[in-house]
Length: 148
Image (cartoon, rainbow, N blue to C red):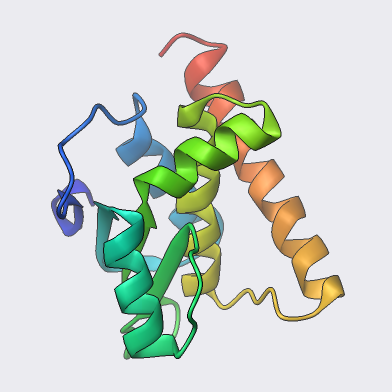
């Protein structure tokens, strides 16, 4: 599965990703009973993401992630996750969590969108947050506390 999961850095310097992020993403996908076709996780600047947000979604505001879903088959996951490094850093500070924790939260948020979860209504937002928390705890329990 790793060969279909790519990380890119667009208009920013590369940085270290959380340890075991590939394995964790694989677990999330399997847990949701999807098959990975291809995912590109693209880390970028606020400016770059704002441009995407304006051009593709007609939203004129900063955001931490923009997700593009390209799947053609049911239960297939194929998409691009564009993530603002600056928003991740700011959110981590605002929520008093580590940058890696916030980065993982944003990644799983994008994955959840690719699985079909929405965050348009308050009820949807609550479910989305609950699922984010579940998968963040999975990461902590499987890859941090066990030291694997």
